[in-house]
Amino acid sequence: MPDEDLVFKALADPTRRFLLDLLYARDGRTLTELESEVDMTRFGVMKHLKLLEEAGLVVSRKEGREKRHFLNPVPIRQIHDRWIDKYTEQHVSSLLDLKAELESEEPDS
Image 1: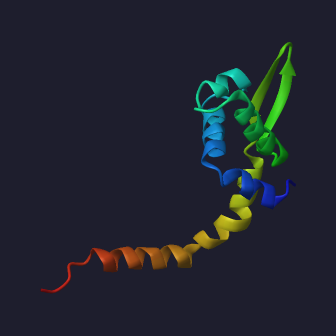
Image 2: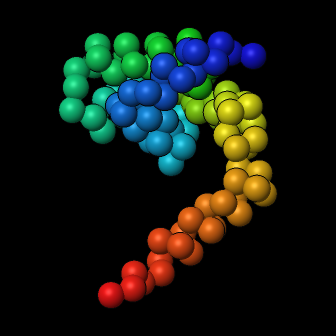
């Protein structure tokens, strides 16, 4: 299992989240394709991809002269199962429903 701290660090940056969104939309993009979607240097994109790979969120595969990048959603799912899912249990949902209902009521004039 990838180190959770690396996954959280990778997901903390909006550019890296955007790169993950791009790979989600169309997997197997090259560095050139990803670079064309962001306003930064090729080197900057390479640094972000390296961190995403270290976190296990991106897997790269060499195909001929090109290196293709693929999304690996497993670490995100593991984070979800460990840190998010337990907080969305029924009692938390019920409290959120109650809060929304109370906030939607008109105050008495």
